[in-house]
Image 1 (cartoon, one colour):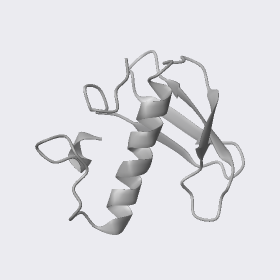
Image 2 (cartoon, rainbow, N blue to C red; image 1 turned 45 degrees about the vertical axis):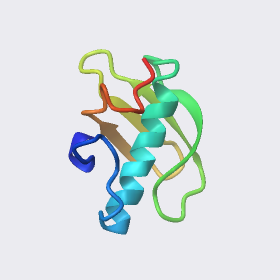
Image 3 (cartoon, rainbow, N blue to C red; image 1 turned 120 degrees about the vertical axis):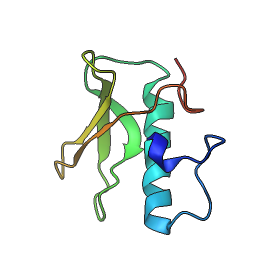
Length: 92
């Protein structure tokens, strides 16, 4: 996630729209999941990022590497977010 952020830890406004939207989605996931830091897939209130999918994602913090793993059961979109620790969205 760090590679999406500027020197102040913010998502740059001059970033291309698609990259900014992806960075904002990852920030939302990190903010939400680190409030409880579940180690098993847990339903969130966040809609899938995949175009056209309106399903909610499940997410977890991976015990072995602290990556955030998220998955959509409807469209099978699956991602991992690394480099999120100590960002402004890290609520641990």
